[in-house]
Image (cartoon, rainbow, N blue to C red; front, side, top):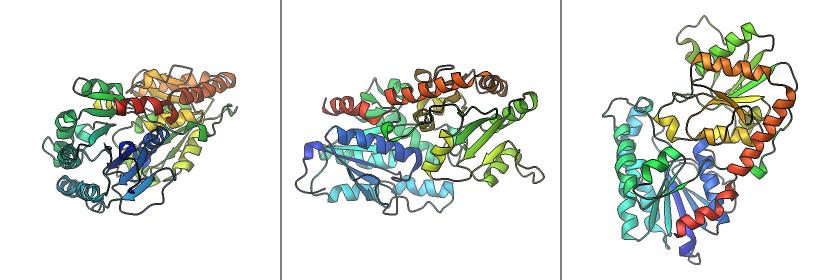
Length: 393
């Protein structure tokens, strides 16, 4: 940050994320940064990554702060070390700046970052804002158990430390209601530069339907039951379904489906593309008839908001999903997607039967509806003026 910059218009975004190649986290930071730059702020991104990665845009500066030095260690050991060390390099970097920012926005990092940044920002009269985008289930956390270091870290941040801040940014209605009674809150869904994304608006018109799933399923998404449901539908229907998967390796897929059983093979209706770049994965979604996302109706799914749904709408691909988070605001049955009643196999099968019956004309209309929803709801430019008013209020 140079001496001539306007302190009242400077914002630093920090956290343990990687940028610009950091998946949904990097997408979140990019959308937020573009809104802030459009609003007239000077943005510096202090990423926790080790490598100095070339930035995607020339409108803001990216600095690598070497926070993530222990990624090679086992999960439990890694998170235990981060509990005591995360945020140290970031604070030291902020202290070295010749001119301090007006606002610091923290994405992830949680308690270790907050315990360092809260007193420093108060001392320097800097607004500290947390960008809350998720709230993990205990069963999803490394180490497990009520007293695992990672769970204590997250729960302390979500229930105590974030509530001490005067302003927060949140991604969902669930988090808006949780923090809105204690602080000023700005709800910002996942945002993209939708204008730069070229959609496909016409149906492929083929008898075979392609469904896509991208990302690491982990414990969040119900992919195994989706595969089971598709297998059963293919047995009963003349119109076959093909599932295209990107983001996990074939080995990971086999382990998810069969465990240690080495005698079984991946079903023929699945095409596994392995680990791809973000652009390649988006092309798979664009060239499919539907994307699919099924999640359990639990806190993690209500608090977060799946970026992959926003990306699917942006490329014109309707979404087959059950209604978690704020999806009911954006996905309407047979308009922008197909609504699955719940996460059960029977409900998934019923939803799959519905897409089989949809004509090419109806499907083309759904693709246009999906794209229109992305343009009207998720382009970063829509939030330029509202976030400026929020920050300056």
